[in-house]
Amino acid sequence: MKTIPKRVKPVSKSARRSLLGLIALVGLVAAGCASDAELDTLQPQSDTAREIDDLLDIVLVIAGVILVLVVGGVAWLALKNRVKNYDGDDEFPEQITHNNTLEIGWTIGPALILVVVAVLTLTTHIAINDTEANALEVDVAGESTSWEPKVVVVGHQWWWEFRYYFSEDVDGDMLGDPRNLPPADIVTSGQMIIPTGEEIELLVTSRDVIHSFWIPALNGKRDARPGFYAPWKIEADNPGVYFGQCTEFCGLSHSRMRMQVVAMDGGDFQGWVDQQMQPSVERAGESEAVANGRAAFAANCSSCHRVTGLNDDTYDGAPVESNAAPDLTHFASRTTFAGGLLNTYNEDGSFNRNDVSAWLRAPEEIKDNAANNLPDGVLPRGMPNLGLSERTISDLVAYLESLGERPGDWVIAATEVE
Ligand code: CUA
Figure 1 (tube, rainbow, N blue to C red):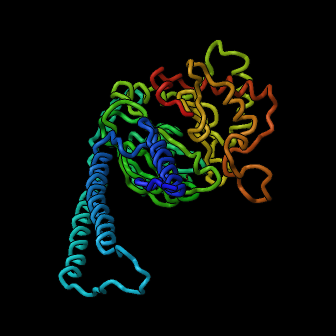
Figure 2 (figure 1 turned 180 degrees about the horizontal axis):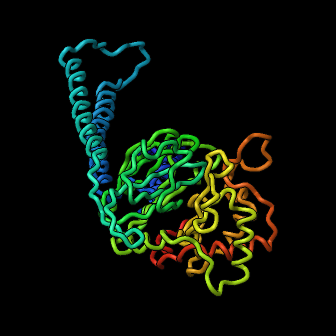
Figure 3 (figure 1 turned 30 degrees about the vertical axis):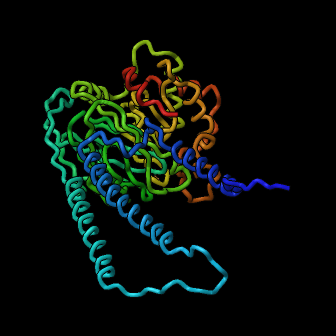
């Protein structure tokens, strides 16, 4: 019987399996590269973020060349020195040791590369830590005020607070203990509003544990440490929203401690300041639900949450671990709540009664916390379940909707969280 010699070696099963595995892996990795990812570090939107991105590009190229040289060299040597026809003898290839030129080369070469990377890194480090914010003219309660643009950023379990002091040049001495900060002109949470194209200095601190403030499109990370005020800065080329995320593990809901920077043109920023300076007042013709909600708020919420015009005279911090809960004076002017987790407005622009109600009904079901059934003497972290009746929740929602002005449509659309 005649046999036909096989010309081509068929691909083995295991090789085929490896190939399929490799394709699947590449697909999986590539799936992580969304072009419009909210936390994309590779699409800088400010001078500072560009400096960091430029450094990353150079280091990636250097590292890439080294990777190709090392892997290529290993592969080339392995192929060059492979045993071509192994005949079963315990025969060793020629053993080579010591090559002074090579050894000196691969000591000096990497050292020089590291020096270059170190110089570039230091230059970038100095540049991004150098702040040169220009004073801005801001109308504060009808008076033109020269504002050294600074915002105090305070981390809490699990939300961010932003405090604006227009009339004073704030520093750590003036601020004192982060757990007991002096009254500010504007206090907001979850969203920091800045004027476009201006460098804004930040003082980053914490009221409980260590957090880290990070808006990838605008700057790198800065740790928020209790008892310290770390200098940082933020600046955006264009109006828009820039997403961020706490980036230091800080307990149960670390992954749900989000924030946004909203950059507005100068006029819009002034408009926002004007709104935020207004206290909350009873409005003529307000509904019964709003009036009931105000009473319910005073009874259930005002020991933790401050509302200017309602309880700012008596408010003295919240009986929680961080000694504070979000200031709600302008709740409805912010498009996210619950630590940047939920939308205050629906896609069609209407107030998100569903999510606000759900949050009031059982916050622990939306966001893990340590606020319920605690042993004596242990303070809550996050919002406790207050066991509110549906009637009270409905009134509170009406009251919250009345606090502050609804932001513009572009802000609602751009700041939407999933
Ligand atoms: Cu705050 Cu992680």
